[in-house]
Image (cartoon, rainbow, N blue to C red; front, side, top):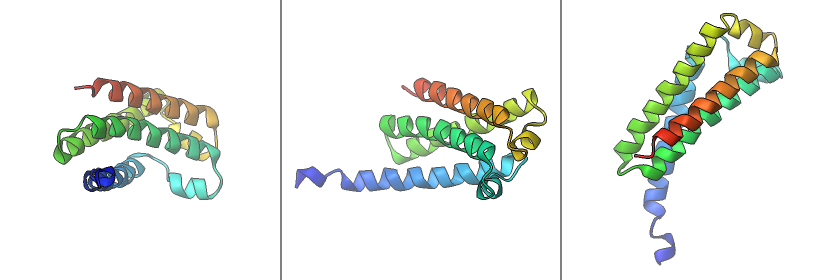
Length: 132
């Protein structure tokens, strides 16, 4: 059956991607000055916008790294590069808005939208640069 011949590699890359997303979330959630999950559970839209934008901003280059990877290790390395880029975007946005975490905690969507847009923009550029 050639229709499922690629199932093994598909499952391997999917497992690696899910693992990298879990690592990304663990690192990102520790890097931020606010507790996104707790805020989201309390229906804080700003926290959901910021985290959602960051997650999409990370998975865009991760998808490209899977597409271009020559091996699982290659995918992992470029997935880690994407993680560094996204954490750097958060830190840079915090330099621009030193009270970013307080504003997200207060539910201010303007600050969250800027962070989400910055994360998405960096993710798009990161993905485009991964056309090696």
